[in-house]
Length: 311
Image (cartoon, rainbow, N blue to C red; front, side, top):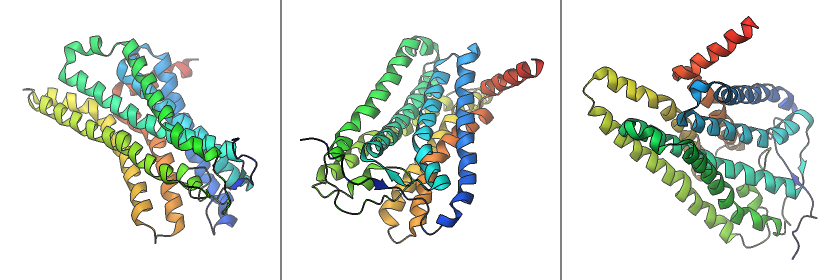
């Protein structure tokens, strides 16, 4: 049976009722998108160019920045197309591919935050074995494993979308494609597509968050055993950036989940706005957090700009 790709295209939605203001709304979106690209692009360049940052902690940070860049580049074309040019149509293949990348990268990002927690756990709880445990080859294997976990786990729910018939409304609720949006438009049995994401979220986001919390309990226990108050503060300070990024990511995840589950009577614009916060706020904040809280990153930025000024 061939995929059902000949049906009418889906219609993306910007901000319902505010179509006349889409050009104005596009201004802050453009600023945020450019900031995300600049911030994460700069982080990647610094980590590649500065040998002081060639350590496991920064390799994981580079993975996080790369994932944030990919999420942004996945959503930006359709969002800005709707806001700038009112281009609402998207064919089925492009829509399903966009949904696949959006959801896969979200799982990847959750995994990277877990790997960064493990990095801090090893650095603080077993510092003498840090370099022998987190070798470059192991960091690369962890990164590849996280990519495979994210992209392979999303194939089962996305693939059936190609074969579903779509005989209901073709209007989507966002300016980008999400699995849960497309699934509801199908005139077919979508039981698997309803159950699988719940199981997947439990085994990825929820389990990752639990392990991160457990890791920090062990880290805190180790830090409290350090006699010197100065050394305790120094150890905890290396975790501040990661904890901040974890909170930014999981607070937006929880917020989006609560809005979808319990905010059925909330205005539709609230649901849409929360979705944009989920996809834009972590990529915007992550480079800012690490630039403000990590001295090595700050020194690297200073070296970069001082080198540019001399040139």
